[in-house]
Length: 221
Image 1 (tube, rainbow, N blue to C red):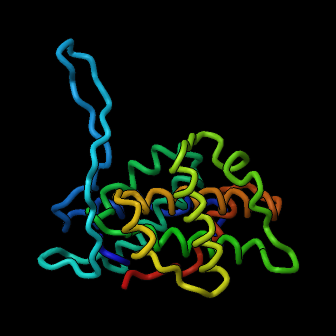
Image 2: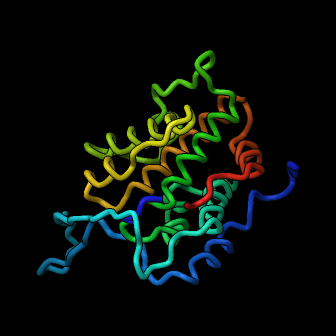
């Protein structure tokens, strides 16, 4: 991560929420915030965007680094949420405690999960998975505006790059965003790819999640 920082059809994907609780007992920092809501003089909530400088670093002095257990918990939580048809916003909220402030984690985990989904469905040069309409077809509950679309596109293409055998330079790209939200867009990309992969194979999303859960997954480094 970069610091800013045998199939059983009857079982559920994983006891993911319990894994998250266990992983986060050793953390003392919550997720970074990129927007603020203020109350005006009339008591109404007003949304203000402030310029926030987010510094990404490769080390995290004095703070616990994400562990392989954290990476496994993040992967399983996402697969579990999709398998039980939880909403994307609900899954995002469940994953937030695993994100250290000003760190790309667990974004890398989700890029590799998306790459696993591409491999699982047999996507290749000979039989590519079409990206046209990916957001509209497989993230219909999410609305992206302006620069958010570019962030999602970067995460989608970065996952495809990982599937192709390269490692994207996350530090250079994400530092430019000046927002602590790469991990969220990596999650959106993973959700879209898993749903698209299930559609490509012709099986329910739940089955795709169960199959992907049997794979070892990406380990935190």
